[in-house]
Image (cartoon, rainbow, N blue to C red):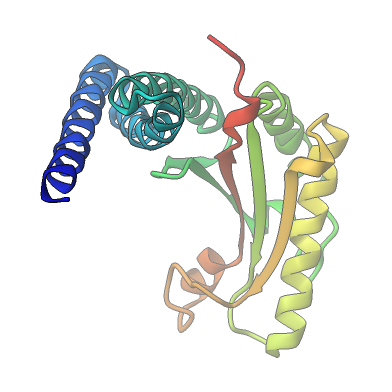
Amino acid sequence: MALFMESSMRRQIRIKILATCAMIGALTACADAGKKTAIGAGVGAAAGAVAGAVIGHQTGNREKGAVIGAALGAGVGGNIGYRMDKQAKELEKIAETRRTDQGLVTKLKSDILFDSGKHDLKAGALNNLSQMAAIIKKYPENVLTIKGYTDNTGTPEKNKTLSEARATAVREELIKGGVPAGTINVLGMGPENPISDNKSADGRKANRRVEIEITADESKVPKS
C-alpha cells in the first residue's frame, strides 16, 4: 500500500513538472507577442495539462497526456491572446480600449452616444458603432457583455432603467452592423462602479458611460 501511494505521488509530481515545463515553453514562445498573449498561453497550457492528464489516465499514460494537453492548450490560449491584442489595437482607434486578463474592455462616453436623460443614439454615434461592429464581427469567438452606467443623479430605479436602455440601444446597433445577437448580453448597472467622483460635474460626466466587455469562446477560435 505504501509503495502504491509513493508511486502515485511520484506520477503526480512528474505530471506537474512536465506541465510546468510546457507552460514555460509556451510563455517563452509568446513573449514577443505581448504580455496578455503570454498569459493566455500559460492559462491554456495549465488547463490543457489537467485535461490531458485525465485523458491520459484513461488511456494509460497520464504523463504523455499532460504534455500533449499543455501544448494544445497553450496553442489555443496563445492564439486567443494574440487575437485579443490585435482586436484591441483596432478598437482603440475608435474608442478607449484596454486589455484585461479575461479579454478587453471598450468604453464609450454617454455624452457622445446620447442626449441627457435619453437612450436614443445620436447620429454621430451610429458611425462609430458601425465601425466597431465591422471590427468585432471579424472575431467569431467574441462574447460581449454591454454594461450601461449612469451618475448618481436621480433615483436608483430610474438610473438602472436608463442604463439598461442605453446598453440595449448599443447592442441593437452592433447587431445591425453584423455582430451575432446570440453573442451579446446586456446589463443596466445604474450608478454602480463609478470611475470618478459624483460630487463634480466632470466626475458625473465620466461616470455616464457604456462599456463593452469582450471575452472569448475558445471553441469558436479559428484554427491558425
